[in-house]
Image 1 (cartoon, rainbow, N blue to C red):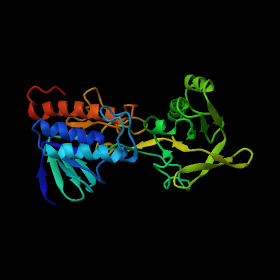
Image 2 (cartoon, rainbow, N blue to C red; image 1 turned 90 degrees about the vertical axis):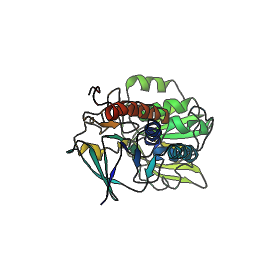
Image 3 (cartoon, rainbow, N blue to C red; image 1 turned 90 degrees about the horizontal axis):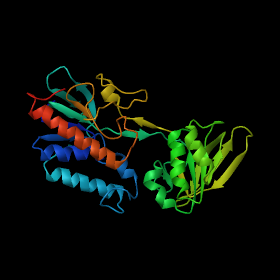
Image 4 (cartoon, one colour; image 1 turned 120 degrees about the horizontal axis):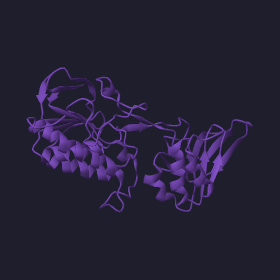
Length: 312
């Protein structure tokens, strides 16, 4: 395989990765982004985004297309469909091995994001973006005055129900166990809102026509099966960070696998940074991903160009 040398390598081409590319290139760094799929990450899963400053309403793919155009305008090279197979930290420069090449740079920013856990029931994939969502904050406004279901039992599910209670006419919070794992202060707030709690209940199927129309539930106490009319299904059964490549080289992660980064987005290994949904920051939004990426590049520039005064 050929060896290619860069000033900065970014792993992942979602909102964080593309932002890091823009700031890296504008700083005069020869910048590469490698992405195992097509650019976009979780952003392209949103049919409409209405909370990103400057864009009152924008399709997720359209927003990412603008990010890509902005990055390439400044000379960022984006290698899509090129998964990273290994990181090698033995040399002074960092070696990023992919399926197509070997890349070398003094600094690497990991922006690999995370992927949502799916229910794995019939209809979930078919109606994704057509009533099935994984982000109440992103998509809740599309269900004003409608009946929706939130599936999950942790803080994310309960918080999603809180958000949707201000928008939907009725929110059904569905959990397969007897009690939710959410914090009591959140649960107390839900009791004062239009949220119906359905415990010991599992969703077995999501049904619809062109969009979601209903869910089929199973009561695991009584054995009763029901079909409930809903317009939206918000799946909140957890997320999994794409941090395997980081863990393999000793980058510290928390118990859930999210990369631990400090206020400069530095990891525990000098020259390696992380930004976006793969980090421990609990707020998983485009805006926070963009902000973290900017901070990471500003610090990485000092690490790359001014090592004589850089303080690790």
